[in-house]
Length: 242
Ligand SMILES: [Zn+2]
Image (cartoon, rainbow, N blue to C red; front, side, top):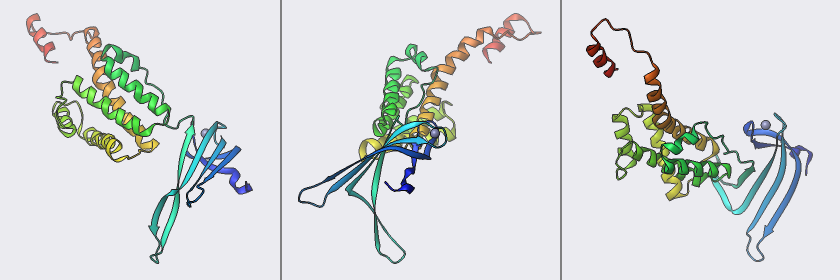
């Protein structure tokens, strides 16, 4: 190991991606095919974050067949080996929201799907997590009486028309639909930041439509009725319009 390689960039579980870290332990594993010019190299590293002193583990794999090609200014072909990184603890790991358990009384299926998504995130399973988020959203819209046979875009239009999502949120949710579909059908692998944004959307949607709504309903009887100068029967009507 060269001196200048003792500090590298890593995804700290506390500080986030691309943070300087000291390599405090390392092991290199190489493999070569006997006849073909195919090889792989895996670097296992124990890293210590230079920001928060957290200790975490990085695995960096290079496979000879996994190459990105590009052209320089002279039209010469440039190639670069793609490095696949994985970490422990998982960078995707995210805390469960405090209201997650309350979903049990709303819908057990939605609760179970979301729990599997969190497990996927904990274990760095990006594609499974993305498709799980899409499944969770489909289940959530079904609970809101959106026809499950409709396309995702139609579901979004229905939710928008019913005032359950805003225009900006509708556009963001459309990305979620594409993301789940791309992961499922075209092997697209979302990065940690994209997954975090997608999970933000799913959590906000579930919280607003299933948790907040029931909390507001519970709150309503405790809000004192306005003092009315009109007869009692009229004031009951006015309250009904609130
Ligand atoms: Zn850190």
